Length: 384
Image 1 (spheres, rainbow, N blue to C red):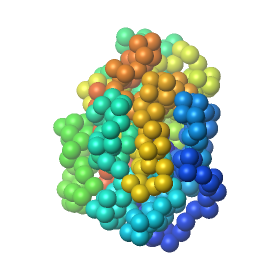
Image 2: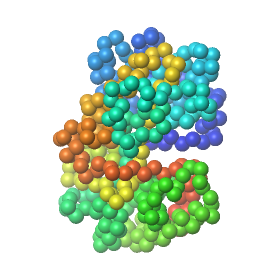
Image 3: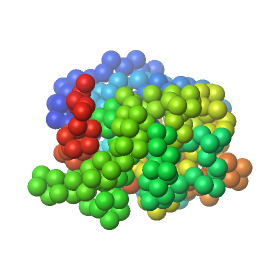
Image 4: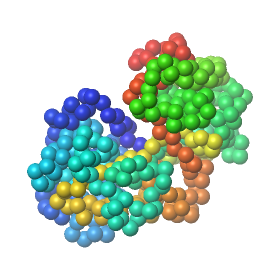
C-alpha cells in the first residue's frame, strides 16, 4: 500500500492551505492530469501498465503522470480546486491518486468531488464492498497485513488461520516468529493492533477516530499488552523485534525465522522478484483478518477533462488492470474477488480477505506506539 500513509494532521492541513507542489502539467484538453501522493512503485505501475493500456484502449486520450509529493501537496491542489469551484474555473487537475475527499475542509459540502455511485461507471458494481467508504472516495487497489511463512518448515494445511492457532504455533515453535516495532512499519503495527482486537472481543468498531478517551483507552489497550507480553519469551531471541517491514522479510528469506506478519503487497512483490523463495506461503486469519485498507482516488466535479477522468476510473476496474494489481504490483484488487480470473483467485485463495479492519490514526495510533514501548518492549526506547 501507500507507505506515505494518508494521515490528516494539523501540519498537513496548514501546508495544504499555502504550499503547492511544483507540477509540470502537459497541456491539452484531451490530457488527463493525474497526480499522486503514492510511492515510486505506484508511479512505475501506472507508467508501465495503466497509462499505455488506457491510451491504447482510448485513442486520442492521454494521461499525464505527476508526482505530487506527499499528502500535503495533494491537499494544496485540492484547496486550489475548491477555490476554482467557487469562481467557476478549471482546477487544472483531473485525478488524485492516494487521496481522501474529506479534505480540504468544506470540499464535500461545496460539491467539489464526484459521487462515483452516481457517475454511471459500468464497472462500479464490481467494487469489493469491503473497499467502499464515502461515495466520493474511489477504491481501486488495497493491501492488508497477513502471515508469511516458510513452506519448507510449515505444511500449508497446518498454517494458523485463527488468532488462537497463531498463538499456539508461536508457543510451540519458540524463536521462529518475529514482528517489527509498531512505530517502524505497518506490518508490526497491525500485528499489535490485531492482538488488541483479540483482547477486546474481536471488535474493531470499538476504536474510532472520534472516540478516544485516555482512561478508557488505557484500560482497553492494557488487555492487548498482556497478550503481547505473554508472547514475548517465544519470539526470536526471546523478545527481539525488527526495525521495519523489510528487515522482517529479510529474516524470513534467510530462514532465520519461519513466520512473520507482512504486508500483502510487499510479500507478493518479494515473491515475484525472488527475494522470497517460491516455497513461501501466505495466509490470512479467518476469524478476523489483520488490519489493512484500500487506496482511494478522487475526481473533482469542475475539471476540464471530467468525462475522460471517469473513463479512467472505469478502466481501473477492468479485469486486465485488476489482475495486474495482483501480479505486477503485488496489491489486492479493488473489485470483489469474483471478478478476478479463476486462475488468480485459486492462486491467492489463502489470502482472500473476509474482513479488512481499519485502525484509526491520531490519538489511538499514538497510544498504541507509546503503550507498546512502556508495557511490552520495556527494554527498548521509542524512536531509537
